[in-house]
Amino acid sequence: MDGKTRANIKPGMLVNIVLKKDQRTGILTEGIVKDLLTSAPFHHRGIKVRLQDGQIGRVQEILEEDE
View 1 (cartoon, rainbow, N blue to C red):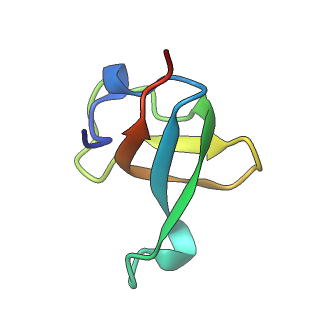
View 2: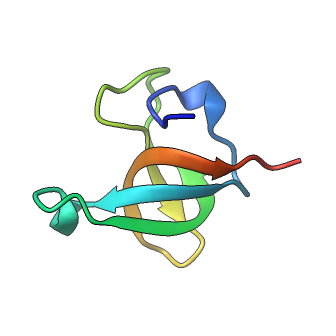
View 3: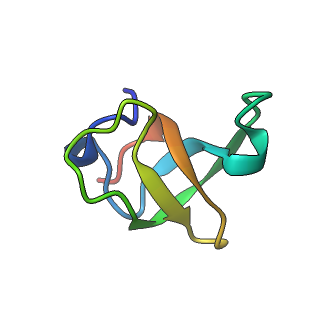
């Protein structure tokens, strides 16, 4: 699943994000969602989230859904 639709993303999910500094290279960072920072229901580059370790980026893919 991709990370462009806000309804697909919930705190506690394992996701891959792209950090601002990695946007040119496309390097992905894996982590668990703590907060959703984008209020819009859809964003063409991915919903912006804060991971539990404090890193902020846009969700590129959802790896594991929270049960």
